[in-house]
Structure formats: C-alpha cells, structure tokens
Image 1 (tube, rainbow, N blue to C red):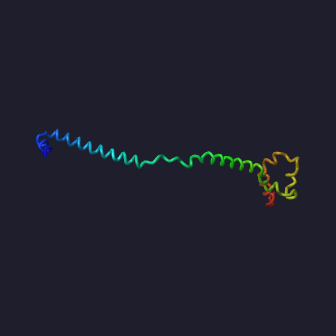
Image 2: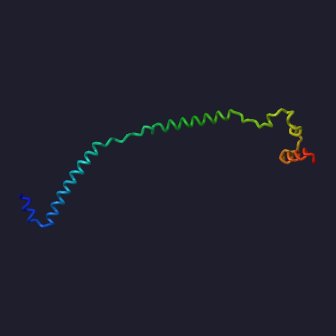
Image 3: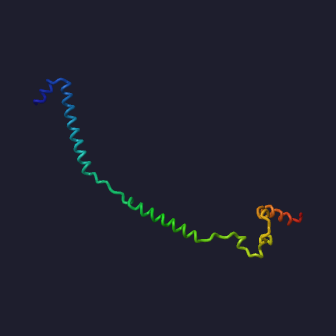
Length: 122
C-alpha cells in the first residue's frame, strides 16, 4: 500500500522512470537465463572427420595417375589398316622407294584420278 501512496504523489516522469527500470531489470534477468541456457546446450566444435583423409586420398590419386601413364606407354598404338595389310594388297608404287615425295603428298588427287580412269573416260 505504501507504493500506492508514493505512486499518487509521483510525477508522471518519475512513474515512467520507475517502470522503465523495473522492465530493464526483468529483461536483464531473462537475457541472463537465456545466455546460461544457451551456453549449457552449446557443444564443443566438432573436428572435421574427412579433413585428415585429403592428403592420403590425393597421394593415392596421383599414384594411380602415374601408374596409368606408365602402363599406357608400354602399349603400342593400333597400326592403321594399310600398314596391317599384306604386301600383295598394297600397290607397287607404295612399296617402291623411288616414288617421288610429291606423289605421296597428293594421294587424294591420285585416288580421284584413279576413280576417273575406272569410269572408262580415261
């Protein structure tokens, strides 16, 4: 009851200040409780389990790449079909060492020329 008499004599500004202080104290207690609860629930940061695997995984990948490169060097590339053909299937001028280089450079022209002669026009 004593507060009621003080409230009646207090000015509106004093009443407002008292209410603001009481509200601030109440909010401070609530924030303090929330902070304590949050810290209690907080877990220590977990270490990344996969981070330590990065170096061995990279080393394994590099070793596999090196093995593939070395393995592929041992293989011989597939020969073109003309090189696999028996000598009887090759034209004589291919086997002739005295054939001019210009003849070998313009094979498309000579194939075309041979096709023209097959038509009976040549």
